[in-house]
Length: 465
Image 1 (cartoon, rainbow, N blue to C red):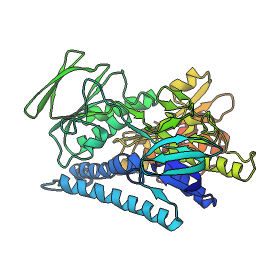
Image 2 (spheres, helix red, strand yellow; image 1 turned 90 degrees about the vertical axis):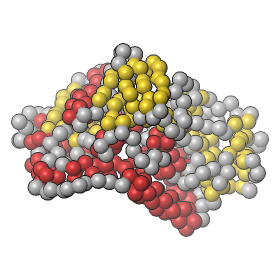
Image 3 (cartoon, one colour; image 1 turned 90 degrees about the horizontal axis):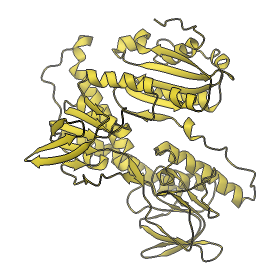
Image 4 (cartoon, one colour; image 1 turned 180 degrees about the vertical axis):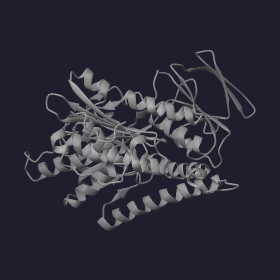
């Protein structure tokens, strides 16, 4: 069974790569041992956003009296919430299955055990068969990081996948890890009325985000009575009945019902590379700017590369690999995609309020030696935000003072994860403040916070308080 390209892994990196290759008329086979969509669609991005919607809606209804709407005896049926979440997943997976069937892309539902190159082609082995391909793309993803002293058991100590399998909510949950996943689940559970505490080893939540933005999120979390323990860790724990007691390094104790461990993710690849000395950077497959490993025509994309563990990073890497492979097949080595600048990939955290960013933070810009100018604008001075009762938030635009180009956009507030698309255009196209002066924003919209923030770079914001 010979194919031009073999893609190992059907997550947002692998499945997108295979589709793009097929669109270009290139023969491709996809290996996926479970279901199309990978962790993101089945146990990550999509199901959590389905929960975010319901949790936000429930919380808004609880506070609807501010709009003159009185809702009595408000409640939710979490089992139905759980079923809806699964229905969303099934709809999307079924859609992917249909796309693959329509495009006639073969899917091998087996685990790839080994890849070798005995001749001029790669050999891709599963337990039952062997396939050959001229190009191989490894997209095997990542898994939740497990603390050695606190193993996942799916009952009391939960991974981010385990927590999505809950059919009922606890009274109290403690989240170990204050990164994107931890903060998102903290917001979800809090909006459902669960008592939430976060324990984070380092002194900040969302440590990779702009710290001025993070402070705004901290304030919002405290208003929502999410208890945050920073700069500490769990030293020991005990369990009695349905209560778990966590003893922290700072001397405090937390008595809780469930523990969600969200201390990051680790790249995973069980494929054995036989007689191929594939280079690794720790547990990540090392790649160059073309996503190619040190073995010619062997590529790696997504979380297994450890570059930026986001679904859209994997997808973009995959699209670039497809373009590179097309160029080689057609003998056009000059047809190469532009280098991917990982700093300029948008980052989104679906908390309430949302956090979204692209490009340099204030801290990383200064570390990189930029002389910067900053524009800021608060949601509280935006007409649409006031009408929505969504005044907790701010937009922040960072500019290279020498070139006047936008090098960073950061937003905390309602629909920040949608608004950041404008920031991504600014940063990735290298737009200057003068260019942005030509842009007209619709009124009244939340997008005007970005307009006012860019105007504020030169102290020209009309509505800044």
